[in-house]
Length: 567
Image (cartoon, rainbow, N blue to C red; front, side):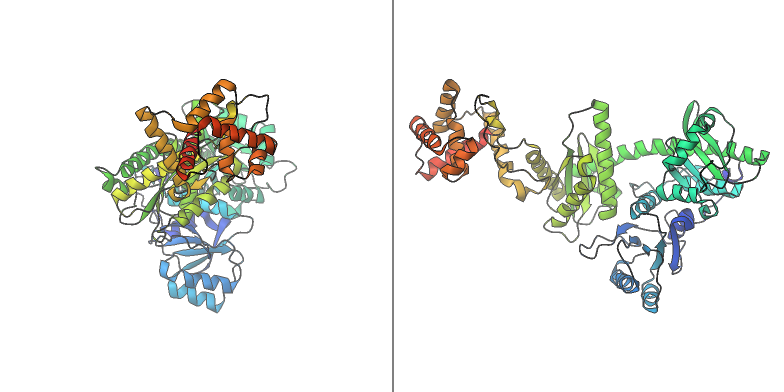
């Protein structure tokens, strides 16, 4: 039995302390440029600094100073964070610590950290979020496996590292780094590149595959010794690895960078460690599913606004503050089966959750059916502009990889307001998902060119009710007609009957005339006909329908019915 598997062992740091973060990440990514580390103070979240559009800062946040260069800029950031009780500021190394920076940091109790060259801000943000476990939904009970908090792979890696006296990584079957120990700077450049990229570089992985290392690793229950890879000078330290399995299923592997013979003691240590890591990986996998379901249940309860909503908001840490609801749906869902579609939706919801965890700390996101819902804290955004910009930024970041539309509900101050915000978001979402206007003309004969498509009302990817209000009302009026069994009457109805019998285009003609405010040249161009042909058709439309184009009420009624035809 491993020495660290005793339940009597106490953790060195509080679970979310800055000391714990630095202990796990070590000198590979972060260095302390100035300040004293408080091992007992919890870190409240991770926030990206933005001088133009100030984010929401939780207490004791780690602030990522992306783009902050020079001592003057750093001192200005420190002064600006004075009222937010930030725990630390991270800037790119090397960090220039002047008297001004030192005074500001000491006065406001903010630690200054340096991010190693070669490491990206995205990688650091992902690592910090995984360490701080921001997906916690209020359950403070932490189970223990081998004296280590359940699922805490970084603590496991550090424990194994201490026993082997070597830096360690825990990786999945795709060679992605799930966790790593401290002391990584003692290994070679290949290990440093792996840690920074959170994955074994492809050239090393290819070499290991060619040498049959993975085949042996996943076939044997004993550790495998890998000498330095030929033609790869960056890998100068021997590796010892062992597969991590649960029964016949291979979950991943443990990799130690250490020279020297594989002694029996080290062999036993690695075999025991593999069993413990397997338990933690299984708990992480099971816990992720449980957390996903729990979060969905809490979010659903909060959005409904009924019994239990107050408790759900409290467990989501969203009670007692202004919030708004967002609703997002993937639009490119034509390919793949049901399982593939569900996986795409879950990835989309996860991506949205990651984005909001950085831009809107404290947000809650869950997939409910085919829609990803989010509740965002919005203390200083009565118009919802900030939420719209955040959602637009998210869609810009995911680009064409995830085609989606997002609806933003109005700010809410209480449980009833949250339910109304969700209702508003659902109404907007329907308008955004409605096919572009002009689809109704697609049934015309192919012998004549189709009209150019009109500009629809709901073209944006992100919108509030105020952005698409007319379109929303049109859809709801159309619903009312369907429920009542109403049919179109009057001039538009007579034109529809004529076109159906004669295969004509009088409805399109009248619509084009309205769309272009009576400008015959533009309306004719829309239908690809000569202006004289358009004038003739318009006269016929007036004769057959009986509409008086000089009468405002007749025009409004016809325009309304034509718009409803498009729904």
